Amino acid sequence: MITGSIVALVTPMKADGSLHWDRLADLLEMHVEQGTDAIVAVGTTGESATLNVDEHCQVIRFIVEQIKGRIPVIAGTGANCTREATELTERAKSVGADACLLVAPYYNKPTQEGLYQHHLSIANSVAVPQILYNVPGRTAVDMQAETVARLSSHPNIVGIKEATGDLDRGRQILEHCAEGFMLYSGDDATATDLMLLGAKGNISVTANVAPQAMSDLCAAAIAGDRVKAEALNTVLLNLHEQLFLESNPIPVKWAMQEMGLIEPGIRLPLTPFSEQYYAPLRTALKQAGLLS
Image 1 (cartoon, rainbow, N blue to C red):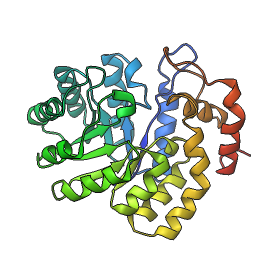
Image 2: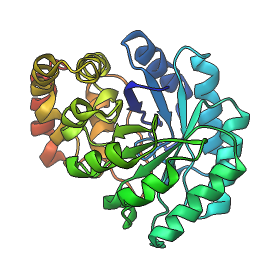
Image 3: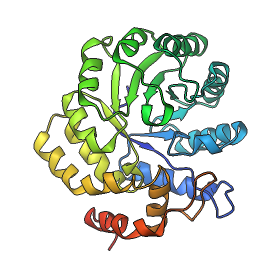
């Protein structure tokens, strides 16, 4: 059972766009030391869309080997081709990933039945814990709670990252899905409220820059300590918002550069953070105690 603060980890790159393995190792050690409960490797924030298949699998393997079982590693293995997603999931399992995160197929806009059959096929093919990922703002398809409920009884489908920010949707999932099925927030701005409703964790962008604070927040919210969770979240509210001034992970990578955690490096079609947004994001980082 994976619970708590789960970082949607960036993939550090050098200025020429090549992967920066030393910085990746440093980030992993930082997260272990500061209380992050699990790592998502090569998800949206990890620029899965701009890594080729070999790089994708190399990053997953590197993270698994660096973590050495200290906290769970969840590999992003989704694709809009069922066969490709199955292959990526098989490869992630083969290198030791603890679970896989599978985004709803993007661009080709499957029906709800198509979403069901896609995830069912992968779950039947690969015996590894699988977490569904619903993020219609990126995929142009919204996996409805009824579809999630149909999939929730499969033994290899253990949870969903729900990134709509819709608390009513979260309630529906909690009410209708199989016992033991895990709901995770995929939206930092509403994650505290969702965890207080019963979600078991937050797959977080903010945790890239504030791992200890997000760990403390998630622990409080999951324990039902509303006063403490809301107090911790108040400090981070502006940061949650400013980290999405442009498409993720553009702002969070810039913030990490400002903090000295990574070097400049992002791949086209993503571009460097726009200078007009530097001031508000710096202010949010200072409010959160992350910059002096």
